[in-house]
Image (cartoon, rainbow, N blue to C red; front, side):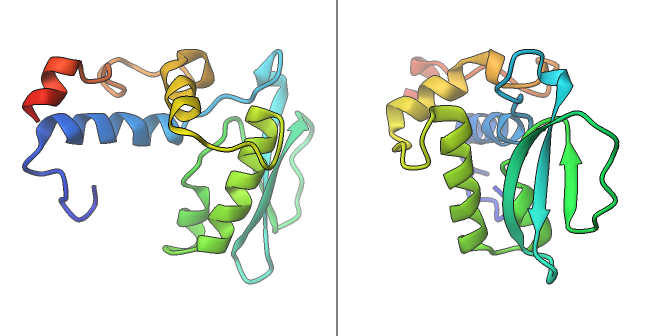
Length: 141
């Protein structure tokens, strides 16, 4: 999206934008998610190491830990523009917390089901998270 790859395909741009917003606002998969936090752990040299789901408690002052009230799949990129290993670690934990196993395959079907389930995401304004494109719209794209 950043390099204008979708500029000539507005329907795909809309869908990509929708997915980006959703991937940055994933709810914590626990009953009463407001009672939990995502704790990101970073290395001393500022690279992504892991994330954990932890109970809400007073903020930790450790400079190598950052807390959020939701999961942001873009977090490693916020630390370093390109971090292949960091994303590998993030996806491993994502599979563990959201699909029950660090080795759970992220199949097309599983990912589509995850992104179609609005309960997996913080409530967003419809103007921020547009509805998915329809079959007729995608055929014309």
